[in-house]
Image (cartoon, rainbow, N blue to C red):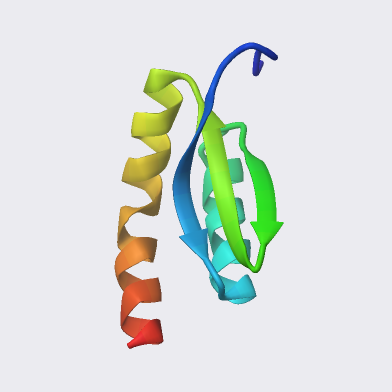
Length: 71
């Protein structure tokens, strides 16, 4: 469970809503709690050192796909 006082770290961001949807599904499948912030660019944030590391591992391939899609 996420504690209120923990700092949230951005683990993924994209302007592509389809990629964000896939990222959310991957995090849900990995049982990683996250929050979404959107201000033009959508950010997925996670708290806790272990959760941040796990989320980045889960989303690594997706980051490469999103980068290729934007170029």
